[in-house]
Length: 98
Image (cartoon, rainbow, N blue to C red; front, side, top):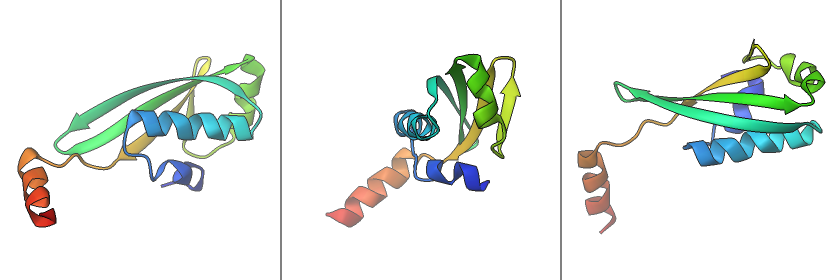
């Protein structure tokens, strides 16, 4: 994972990821809108995080970050999320706790 994406390493869902991205933008003094799409295939989960800055001139402040792709007026982070446990694994974990 790129160093710039390390703050997102602890994120397990779209809500925690949105908070982490907004905190990063706030740290850089950038107002932004964040849209997140999550994908899951073969047990692998990823989040596509689209960041729109206001004004668009602030895009340059984020554009220099490794792991970020510019698509039109938006920036894209692709973040690997932890795999979801299968229902069977969740039941086994619950049994171990009891």
